[in-house]
Image (cartoon, rainbow, N blue to C red; front, side, top):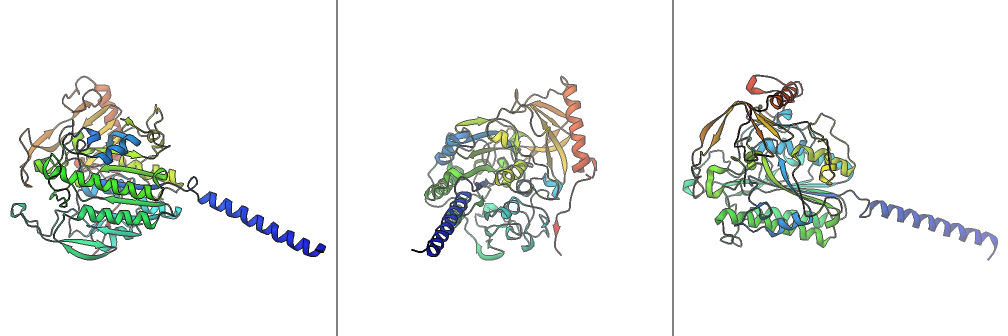
Length: 481
Ligand code: MG
C-alpha cells in the first residue's frame, strides 16, 4: 500500500467515523430521552368529581383510570374555567379565560361564531416542535368549517362538532328517538349518525390508530369524549355491566377506552415518555338525575359556579416526572395546561396574551410556598364574574344560580326542573368547608377586601358583564357570514 492509497483509506475511515459519530448524535437527540414528551389529553363531557373509583365512586368500576392515579397524581382541586361546554373548551385549548377570547356558554349548531383562527391552540403551540396532532371527539368551538380543529392546528379530526344533544330542532327525549348528528372527518360530514352507542368505541379506535401511526414522532392526542353528556349511550358490550345503571356503564366504557390508549402506548414503548392527563369539561348535569353524574362531596353541579360545577376529577401520569400514588390539593385550572405543556415541549408561548401560567413545579410535586396565581376567576353567562378563588377562600358575587333544592333529578333521560337560587356576596373557606355550607362573610372582612380587590383587577382586564364593565384585554371570537 503506497502512502497515497493509505492516505485515501485513512481519509475514508475518518469520514466514516465522523458520519457514525454524527449518526449517534442525531440518534441521541431524537432518542427517547431527548424527544419532548407526547401529550395525551382525555377530556370527558359532564363527568363529575365523584364518578371515578379513585375519586370515591363505589358503584362504578374504573380500574384503568385508578391505575393512572396509582402511577401518577390525583389533583383534587383542579378547576375548569367555566361550568359549561364551549367556554370550558376554549379555556383548555387557549390557556385563556374563555371571555378573553370571546367564547361564552355552549355554541349552538347554527351559530356563525367560533374560536378565532388567530387564537393559538395547544396544538398550534406544539406543531412547530415537530408534534403530530389529532383531535377525536367533541369539538364545540365553532361549527362552520372555518373553525373546525383542522383549522386550529390539528392534523386530523374525527368527531361531533358540538354537543351530542344538539339538533337544529331539539327533540323531546321522551320520544326516545334522536335525529342524526353530523359525524365529521377533517372538515367534511362523513355520516349522519343516528346511533351514539358506538361513539366511545369509534373515538377510541381512532386514538389508538393515531398513536400507532405516530409512534416515531412526538405527538399530541386530544381525545374529547362526547360521553357522559346526555343523551347517554354505551355499546352492547358495556350495557348492564355496572352497578349504577346506564350512567355507570357509560363511565366503565370510558375507562375501557383509557385502557386501550394506555395499551397502545405500552406496545410502542411510549408509556414513560408520555404525559397523560385525564379530566372533564365541567361537573355533572344534576337535573338529569340517574343519567347525570355525582359531584362527590361538593355543592351543586354543571351550570353553577359552586365547586360541583367547576371542580373536576383530574389524574396526570408521567413516570419519573409526576409523582406516583400522590394526591395534590393545590388549586389548578385548565388554563395552566397550555403554558405548562409548552415549557415541557420547549415550545414558544402564543403571541397574544394568555391567562394561564406554568405550574410545572406543582405538577412535579414541589412544595410550592407561593402559588403562581394570586387568584382564579370564575366567569359564566356572557362574561359575568361570579366568584374568585384565592388560597383557601372563595368569594361569590350576587347572581342567580340554579338548584334542585334537595329534590331528586330526573329519570330515564328526562330532566327535572331546576329552581332559581339567589346567591349573594358570600365567602367560604374551602379548606374547612369544601361543601360551601357556611357563609363566613361577616367574620372575615379583611379577606373580603383582598378578594374584592383581586376581582377588580380581573374586571379591568377581562370585564364583568354583570356590572356592564368591558375589559381592556378581551378579544373578539371568529365570525363568518
Ligand atoms: Mg360539558
